[in-house]
Every structure is written in C-alpha cells, then in structure tokens.
Image (cartoon, rainbow, N blue to C red; front, side, top):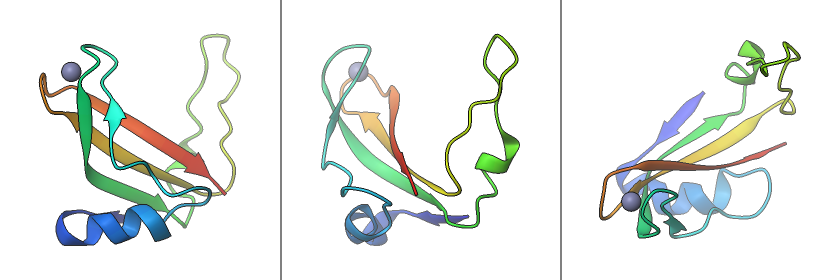
Length: 87
Ligand SMILES: [Zn+2]
C-alpha cells in the first residue's frame, strides 16, 4: 500500500489509477459543495482488499486484486468523500 499526498498527488491522480484518472473535484454528498483531493491510496499489493469487508447479509464485498482510492475533503463542511477504482 502506497499513500500519495502533497506535491505527489496531482500526478498520482493521473498515473496511480487502474482505470480513468481521478477527477480534480467531486461533489460533497452532504452539502453538494466541491470537495478537493487530499490523499490517494494505491493498494497495489492487495493488502487493503484482503480484509474483504462483509455486507449485512454476511457475503463479502469483493473488489478485484488491487484498488486505488482518492480521498476528497469538502471545501465547505469538511466531509470526506472517496472515489475509487480497481484493477
Ligand atoms: Zn460538504
């Protein structure tokens, strides 16, 4: 697992993704303001998904082998949103 932040973040949002680049902004689900990126996690070794979180019915959520997560913080209320994709 590798974490990118600060000056590394803009480039990581383009290159450390398994699908399309992460968007420059996303919408806050609580107040609909813009949320800006502040941290990206590249789970290239699959450690995070190995935890296999479970649904209410007990079946595991199964993302593919590796995932990339970009965390955004709302510019108005501080709520954190996550965009993610998988290999
Ligand atoms: Zn907000």
